[in-house]
Amino acid sequence: MKVTEDTPARLTLTDRPWLFAGALVAAGVVALTSLLSSPGSFDTGERVVILVIGVTALYIAWRGFPFQRFVFDRATGTFTHRIDRLVGNRVTRLPLARIERAAILNLREDRNRMERLVLVLAEGEHPLDWGYSSFSRAPVEKAINDWLGASGRRKV
Image 1 (cartoon, one colour):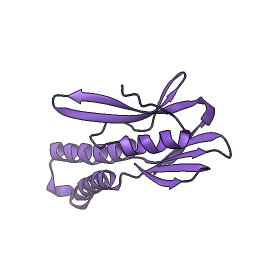
Image 2 (cartoon, one colour; image 1 turned 90 degrees about the vertical axis):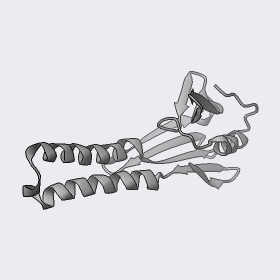
Image 3 (cartoon, one colour; image 1 turned 120 degrees about the vertical axis):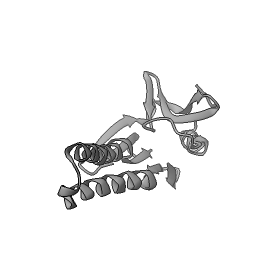
């Protein structure tokens, strides 16, 4: 996730996980292509395994690594979260007035620290990440809070 526009009127963030999504799509396409291009080379059990691997890789790429765009717009007074996938998109809009600040949720497993970026609302949280990641979200959190004029930083 990175800041692509930061002006007093607008803050835009994009999240385009090309590497992970691309690797999964490539794995899925290779598996399905090998299955379709040489149908007599595999017995039934092998065909089922290859089909499951190919379809699962494509599903994970589609579900887990969408292209996302986050726009904080003072002119309209809205926050827009757009999720784009190959087969459609979803748009969520929130009034800027409902957003208190951005925060990082921490999760520790053994010695690994994982983070997830969320917007803190009076009624709960709006996640900006699909899950926890080992990549630091602190620069993006700071950019959002600076733009919103939010003070303080809460780590959960």
